[in-house]
Image (cartoon, rainbow, N blue to C red; front, side, top):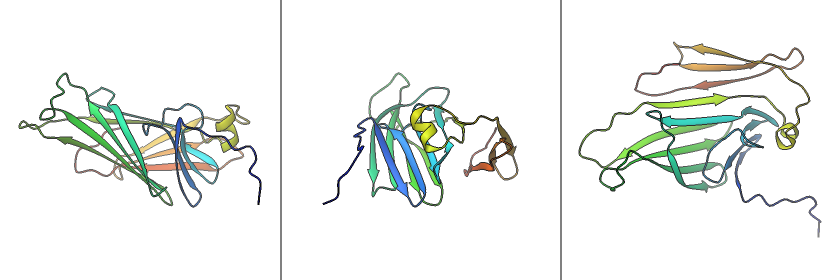
Length: 180
């Protein structure tokens, strides 16, 4: 029988893994920028924070489930002053982990009147390795350069460290209008 050492139970975190990709969120599926939260590939955190707002408000998350270890489904309510089921608006956040991370956002409403919304996603990248993210102590520092490609609807985040070649591309796919 082999011994397990330094095992830590982390009831405040949810983990997804697929190959060399790992996603760490809080129990409600959020990447808050705290501690070891984030999207990691090859032990480097590519996305360190994600904030989703709808019409300028933070959704109120109430449930998150992990599906087969590589997918996650989260539910949030949009508090607009009316909480009757026939008028309430809900946000689902579906995450799928593979060679990359795919996040699908959807609004759900059972109201008679159509609901128009502006969804905003604010991202941050720090390119910390797993030890730096876990311990909170950076071994190296550099700026992260943001480049928006409007034609491709892609945000390029490039780590400007002279000795490291790290970058991530975030692509938005929607039938709606995209602004940066």
